Length: 512
Image (cartoon, rainbow, N blue to C red):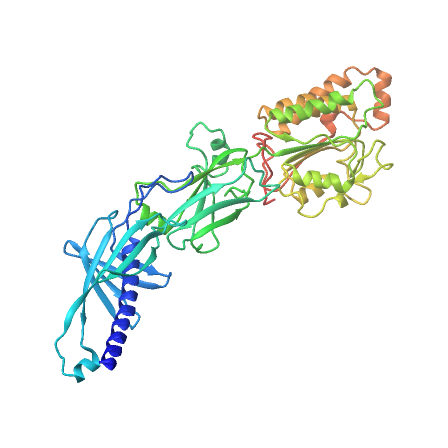
C-alpha cells in the first residue's frame, strides 16, 4: 500500500504538471481573446479604433510558445502544446470577441504501473480540466492580453497572462512647435504596433486648393499634395521610434520646405492591409518656420549725416519681415568667420559696407583698414541653402588684382543669386536702390534682376539728375558710376535670371 500510494502520488503530480502546462498554454490562447474594455479612440496622429478580434488564431505564452485556437462548427477548439511534447485539445462555445472564453477537456486517468501489476485494469474516472480566459486591457503596443485561470476537478492550478500581437497599426507625431530644418533636423516619432513594419512617410500640403504654395511647387514639377517622401531604415520593431528627415522637398532643387503647415502621413503595407481601403492612414501636423534673413551692416554711414544709417538699415529688415522672412538682429561689427556663419544659417543675406575689388570691409573704416570678407572667407559648399545675397559696397563685384571674384565665389559655395556693384556708387543712390525701391518691387513678386535694374534706373535718375556740372565731373573723376550701369547680378547654373523671384520667402536650391 505504501508503494502503491507513492506511485499514485507521483502519477497525480505528473498529471498536474502536464495539465498545468496545458492549461497555461490554453490560457494563453484563451487569454489573448479575453474580454476587453470598450475602445477609447485613437490618440491624435493614431489609427482609428479597431474592433476586438475573435478568439481564433495563434497565441503566445512568454512571447515564445505558440498555441492555436480554431473554429469548429459553432464553437472553438484549442490545441495546446504540453511540456512533454504532446498536445491537449480543449473545446467550448464561442463567446464572441468580448466574452470570457471557457474551454474544457476530459483527461483520462490510468491505473499506473503499480495498478497494472496488482491486476487493476479498469480506468479511473476522467479528470476535468477547465480553462477560463478574460480580456485584459491592451498592451502598450496594441497587443491583445488576457488573464487565464486553470482548474483541475475544481482545484486551481494557477493563473497566467497571455498575449497576442494586435493588428498592425501606426501612430505618428512631430514634437515641438515650428521647426527650421536648416537649423535643426526634423524627427518624426512613430509608434509601431502589432508587428515589425517598414514605414513610409509622406509630407503633404493641406487639403486647400487656394494654398499659394501649390503654385510654387507646381512650377517646379510637384503638382499634387505630396511634396516629399522618406522611409524608415528597414522594418521597425514594435515600439516607439524617431525617424530623421532633412526637411527638403522632392524637386530637383531639394529645397527646404516653404514656411507653413504640412501634414505628415505614415503608412505601411501591413497597416494598410489591416486597416482596409475605407480608413485613412494616421497623420500629424508639421509646422515649418519662416526662413531667416541676415542683415550685416557696420556703422559705415555715421560720418554722412545727410544719409541716416538707421533709415537705411531699418527699411530693408522691415520689408523682409513683411515678405515672410524671420530677420535676425542687425550685426554691426562682424568678423569674417561670424559673417560666414551668419550667411550659412540664413536664406537671404544683405551686407552694407565699404568695398574694394573682390572684397568688403567688415568694420567701420574703408576696406583695407579693417577685417575684410574675401573669396577666401567662403568655405566650400557652405552656402548650399542660401537663396539671395545682396552686397551694397563699392567695387565688391569687380575682379581683384589676382582675378579674385567675390560673386562667383559665393555662387560656387551654393548661393542662387548674388547682387553687387562693380564700380563706386553714391551711398544715397545705393540706399534708394537696395533699401527702398528695390525691396518694394522684389516683394511684390517681380523677378529679382528686373526689379533691381528698374530700381537702379530710378535711383540713378533721382541722384544724378541733382548733380551740378562740377559735382558730376568730380564724381566721374573719382570712378563713381550710376547704379544702373554698375549693378551686377550673378545667378547659379539652373537658375533662370528672367523668372527667379525673392518671394515666396525661401531657401536656395540645395543642388547648385
